[in-house]
Length: 111
Length: 113
Image (cartoon, rainbow over all chains, first blue to last red; front, side, top):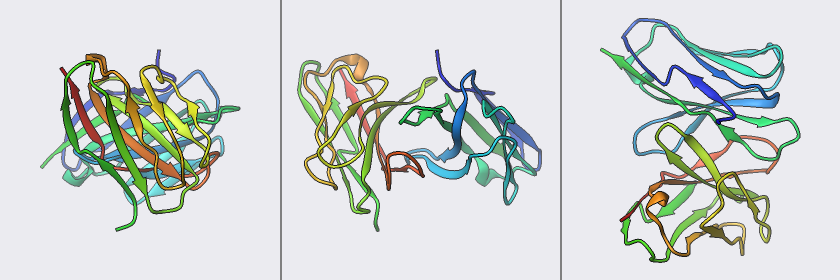
């Protein structure tokens, strides 16, 4: 059983469409991060959210941390082919010292 | 370019052989980590080191060992490789063990036959 479940696992959309990726858990997290990974490379941090209900925007990407700090979402507006990649959420459960990663959402944006 | 260097990039290995994956960072980060990435399972922590001279077990430590003799190097050793250890291995570092961004290497793809 994964500590962090992401959905959907795969997503293929047309350029210009909007999409939302979800990261859910039954555990409470002191913080939650989102990474993007491109083929043949390691993940790269996009954002960290630390406060329940927090919303952060990074250009066309909007990240939200759930009020109870158990879940998060990533919304992309007007997706572009450059957004293609594997999106990973990662969280540090309250009281734990390590970062646990979600199962990932593989996004393909078709031109 | 500063960052994390992993070697080898790719390796095919016979079952039962010993293998060491190398990881070096030049950012003077205190914490270092080894993850394996498998389809459908995401990234899983194998071992970590909060500072030079200390190591700890992650989610999936069995069959792996690590050492942290200095700040920069964090090798991962498979004493006797098995096919289930076929995976992509990522080394990562962080300025501090208790907070902050993880910086990843480009990965080492290991196939155990």
